[in-house]
Image (cartoon, rainbow over all chains, first blue to last red):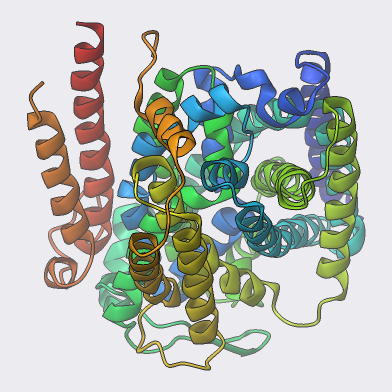
Length: 505
Length: 70
């Protein structure tokens, strides 16, 4: 390694040590129970909720994938701002209701809430299976991102397997030790680091390459006007390294349905929805939703980075490597490259830790305890969740190392099914007439249809498969609920608790 | 209790949603000019709606919060 690369790797090393230290601090601050480990004893304050939500969403995909999207598809990448404008709003209404029943009945996951309302362990098992299926590739992508960043910035001295292994060993230690509070504390640290670095790089790179943001877009308007007009370009082809072929105009059906499904499915991701059970009060939950767009604005500089690379002479190997490629090609100070490395690792870890913690908690609470009706004491539950954290981490690492196909495609397969949770959650928290049979029918038909379209068995006519699935899901849920027997007073009591605002909220 | 804040916020959310997808975004998003803070219009349009959504939700939340306290 050259002296510059040693400086870069040292900054990354210092960052990892700082994460470990911050993640270990809260180890003794929660009770020795599953509720303490999974929901932080329902005592998370406003600042931590803000960062744990924002930093969980902004993953390695945001830091590396979004510049890649802007680089290859132009203004199409702005869909991420579009859905962010309203994507978290459903949680403003669902979150406080979930928090009330969570406190009353002791829920820490969304599936156990649904299963309790409808007395249906099978629904919990189905939701747990969908969740784990969705989260494991998501974690593998974060690991791959961490390995790629360390490999690129060390000039190849740190192989991908060692980089992702090292970074996720740090994550494993603080998640095992501190649970959700470890995730919360590190996410606060990582979120601040990411926001600062995104703005520095997002303003610096257009300036260094084009003389400023205005000048950059002047040049693009002259050379690549189609990339600045909605809906931008279709997905680029990457047949071989260094041969990125930009495509023709994108489709409005794909753009519109993508924005709609993202708005409708966004808050259903379990790692976000479960925050309803961690918040100290309903006020904290509502404020987190209200303030979320301030985190969303941090994607503006991230997108500027991608636009800055569009006419760069040397092509990156792949579109999503445009940011490290620009940094390594510009002969920048190793301090800036090292800080970028820390920021990208922060993006990977701040999502990866929450995803691992969620997948393990869901497997034990929803799959084993609720779905299979096995009894575990609070300490045993905490112990089994820790065991599952190791298992999920190893499984994701194995997938990252051995899967020859595109992991992003696996993840995209999961988007449609996760969005099917929305009608289930709305019916659980609002609709008196909903029944277990209706919930099951909606979930199975919605997930089934979205998978059939995604895998090409049925033609989706360019509309996102999750949107077709949601349509069928709602029809099936309503039709079957209205024609089947609904449970008695216990369901009424559940809805009464959900709709009664506590006086201190 | 008046339902006006809920109705107004609901109308705003509908307007915001319409503005961000086809056909409204297809119509306004065709333009590169006028630039806003150097950003092409199709880009800036999304940023404007993120900011508007934030302000609308702040106003809605504050109104409901005042009612809770009253």
